[in-house]
Length: 254
Image (tube, rainbow, N blue to C red; front, side):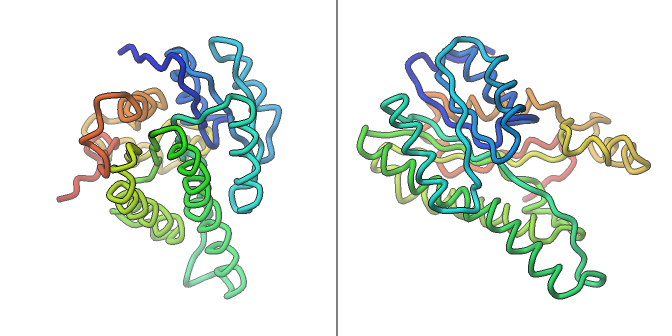
């Protein structure tokens, strides 16, 4: 599948590894100029940029839980490229926490951290990006959610809640922003072969997780990335507000 993003500027949050790196790579292959966001691992972000086709890509650092840092990052990208056409809200964290075992302080910390990065971060990033998109006549935003928003995450309830909130935010803003030629889509993967999932997939639960899908495996990063790029492409305007499952039929919702 070939995509054409010639002349487009794309920000991919959490692009230093995993799904984000694959998304950045595919956008670059399609001719886009890519801003590779990272929080703390600059070496990994630099490695991502070094692997991208083309030469006009940059890294962009920000702690997404800090509103001022998000605003500064968007300003940096617009200053570098003069425009911002597409935003992929991919960055996220998954913190284990138990209502029956954690202390109250641990519980609060997990919720504050997770919601800050997974929901408030994309909300603030979207706000800042939309101001630029309105000024230039339109744009596209794709949020990376999770099947956990629908299925639940008993050992990480803040994660599930943050992704459910991300779904609702995307649908609300899709209705609000369509008249401004700004379209918002969401993908909801299940387990994906990434560094973040490597430990659990290689452990005793691995076979059970793979067998949740009739395909007998989990998703590959490029499968999620292709869905993201399709939604970010021209011609998908009437899909605005959608949430697309990419979970190999491991969880079917009605």
